[in-house]
Length: 311
Ligand code: 5GP
Ligand code: ZN
Image (cartoon, rainbow, N blue to C red; front, side, top):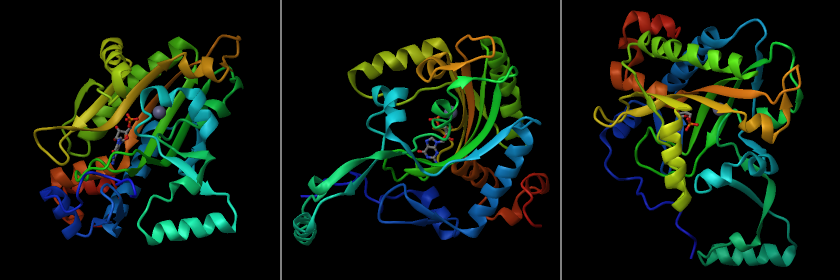
């Protein structure tokens, strides 16, 4: 039998999800957490994109847009499989012959698993927008370090009826690579800036240490050290629920992890530090819908103006 993609039924009752679908903001598919986006949803995301550019860029910012796939070798080296093997999507392809194709067609016909004919390729689906930056930054940074503005469609294998937990979603990030003091100062100034960004959109964010879903027995240890080291903070707001808040942004300080792994050095030869600020585009959009309603035309004028939504 084909391994079921998800134990979650797409028809499971979810009032907020239903409201988004009824309003034409999201179009459901037969797979939980995979949606089409309507025009109004895309206008909100485009408005957020422009507002975020204004917020985090300076004269030296490099803008890079990534496809939804990235190098498998780089994900292996970066350590993602140690923490989140259950979330990673790998790209498999058929590289067989006529007999192999025949086996696939028969297995599909019988409703059987045809994965045996598929081979792991050099690609995985990007789990976060910033990952391709670190291997690409190997070598010596300019004296001032580097500030990058990146985005990608990201994938995480987490089927859920909750519309705020999508399997495929857009992530925008600013990434700072430099010496430790510069990176720490950059990360610190993002705390008030990120809170203000969300408040200016009429949201009421809470800043809290992150609580990532690390895998397996080793995961408990990783979760405990994440809570203790304070290197990742999240901004939480109501999206699908007023009670259980959702992380719409994260502030991450990786210290020397990527610098060491990918041989990134500062101008004076030391291992570079890195930090990133991530925006979950759909989640922020859903938080806005939660706060202001399914009809963006009825949102407060200041919020509409900030997102350049037509009056
Ligand atoms: P992180 O790398 O911190 O887990 O994710 C960065 C941001 O991506 C989160 O703050 C959130 O806004 C967004 N994100 C993470 N997981 C999901 C998800 O399952 N669905 C959606 N729509 N956004 C997500
Ligand atoms: Zn990042």
